[in-house]
Length: 339
Image (cartoon, rainbow, N blue to C red):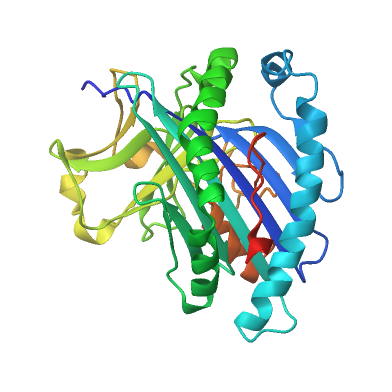
């Protein structure tokens, strides 16, 4: 079947400040173009690093780019520490692990030319404040953020700067990055698709790994119709090599042995006309009984990988280890310390 090609590109920046997290930088900044990490900074290395070769070419006409952004990140590092110190008493907190995050950036549709910008702050895994670009006001979902909302709403000059960045400067940089990085960003990698099962009574997991871009779908079908019941969809996750993986489980309790041939798993990748169809067949199901893993499947939790959703990361930080991804744009200094 024909898959519609999505032509929307994105430039996203993420900042994370943390306190009480052992063996992890107190501040991390990452920049991503179309979900590909392009820039990294953290409070341990104290400098900005390109993560893609083409980023050096994209900034050749601006020799101060790396020095300027390094200084910007250092300032943000200080501001984020102060932000956590400001927020803890508002939430009646003292010690413990606390995370403050900012995500901002823009999207650009190179077909319709439509541009969209966004800015959002989170604290300890929950939304704290966000910018409504249409009304040019701040939205405070929590009572503790109302004081920040009023202060930021009154700063009309800062709001004008935010709007200009999100609707003008950010899209200009995004177009430039896409132009220089198109060999990486606009490529198409097809995945390998496997059927996996832990035990004979466990759900059968259809796993697609090694695909790019991340705009993809994976579904179970019966007689050619997509199933919405008795299936469990997993998130799209990053692999170490810049590709992605995803899985969808089929519960066998609803599948009689004589009906197995009526089921198949279908992978669709944006921009690719042909689907990858895998029949539900016991002969091709791989089990992990007695094995430590499956070749080509990245199941580890990588703190340097940029593609895990920001606010999901926070929850994993609080219960497991901390991972995140973040960056600063060259013309925007985001400081919650204004609160």
